[in-house]
Amino acid sequence: MKHSLVGLSDTLMVDDVRIPHRHQRSRLKDARQPESCKYCGRPGKFSNDYEIFDVNTKGHPGFYYISNRKTGYLSNVFGGDQSAHRHAVEMHKIQMESNLKSDPAYYDDLLKYKWLSCFCPLDLPCHVDTIIEHLRKRVTHL
Image 1 (cartoon, rainbow, N blue to C red):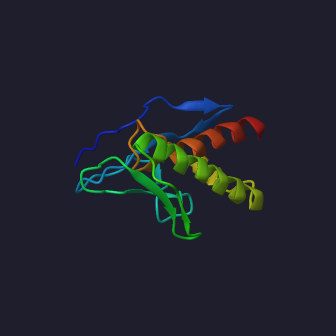
Image 2 (cartoon, rainbow, N blue to C red):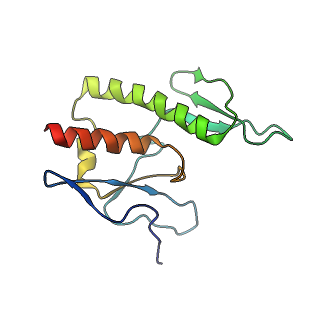
């Protein structure tokens, strides 16, 4: 089964350390991730606990809210997936700060992968983007 890579193909190197790229994981039957790819979604150590839900009110599509089942957090309603994804990413940044405060090397294991994947569409903000940005900064300060 062939799979198509969705994302960047060039490897970014910082001080001889490869920085992973974001890959959109597919929900299609028999879809496979590329080699050297780590899934960073739920459930998992590197997931975003702030989940996006479609309000799905009849006749009013495109309204979303954010929820965190662990903390009970529930956001206001967002009128569009861009703003909902941005808010989920901002909340994930707070989660990341907490993870890094307890372990500064929390995300360092991800440097061994070429790709980090999540189901978020590539044209929307995603917590994987913030992880990659953190790794880029971390590598330059090691």
